[in-house]
Length: 316
Image (cartoon, rainbow, N blue to C red; front, side, top):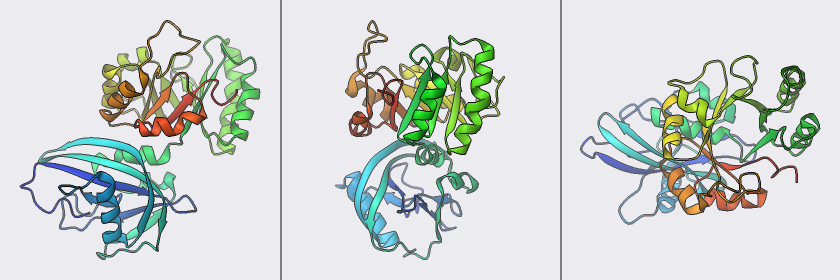
């Protein structure tokens, strides 16, 4: 990227790409020492010039920097970040189809790394949510014991589909049942390369799962990120909750309800337009929840979502 060469410019619009190859590895590049944030790693891209769309800027920058031609780019996340000397908006795209062999055309070091290796590299502060977005899958399944008569059986069904982010929301189960479930479910998910999150209404620190999903009530009661978890998710319904999720350092949010639901018919749906406006202002990945199925993934991504979350969406 060559978008930080001067300090005179106080506001920058930047397009960046999370570039994935056929093996699922992600390309990162090391910034020149002479640039702002020099020496750190980044996702390739650059400044959006006057008259360019974000996509046009991305295609141009990836050709100039890496000598690749971008064949597809889907919106992934938008980040608004304030540095001491400038405000930056990063419009980030997922690039999973390109032609050519990537190389550092400006002699910048590049590396292809596994998504779970990204945390080992030093990135600019604004890139932390991009790393989360690059690592999180498109689907987030919720095992709800008010809907599922056999959560363990349904867990096996989800894992068989390749779903690798799952929340255990077992609010009506007795504690001994929850203990039994997690004793089997957590290592089972690990074996399948999946992450299991426990809902905070059920368990707040008693069990060591891969993550914790905060109810909106528990979210607002916190002033900092709960420790000891790989993933922290949060249920949100409005701007205040989204901003607080970002403030405490949650990795992602679930925003609901997008469409009317049978389970909460009295709750007014956000609709895609309102969802998109809220997601655009959030600096963390946001899943869409409420009345959705797998078929809504494209619409969700067009609205700025990380993907789809659902209870019955993956078991119907």
